[in-house]
Image 1 (tube, rainbow, N blue to C red):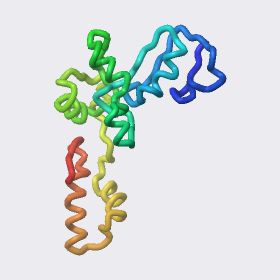
Image 2: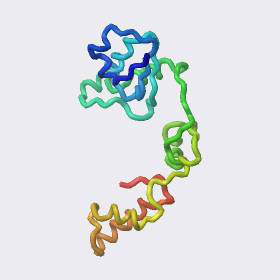
Image 3: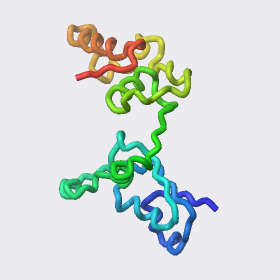
Image 4: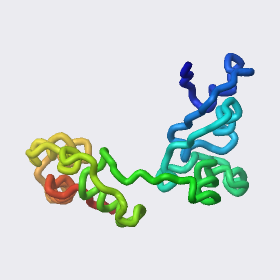
Length: 169
């Protein structure tokens, strides 16, 4: 028997008294510790899946952050029991240059692409003028004045198909 639920719903009355062999919490690095404990208490064994190098739990309260609520159980266990962490290095989501940036900044060049099709993927159309036309108008480039040419110029740079990663200030 398999039951799928959110961490918050795991505390619902329908699951009280239930006992499971295994609990798998996906995106566990994004869940606060108290919320993550609700499903774990229902199982004898648990598996936390996530990436503590990506999104942390969203904690708005400064007082709660000071108490460590923005540190997930995943992060705490990964830090305390590094031998129990299995890092997956093959990824199927990021284009090659974007993966290169993540590799450089976070993953110490351990990531490899799992798909040539994904590695070569381009987000924008191969027609920069079509893409520019879609985005220029909402940003105020509607005429042919100097300001409009300035908007068009930086947008052409930002939307260049051959560039997968660009920082805009």
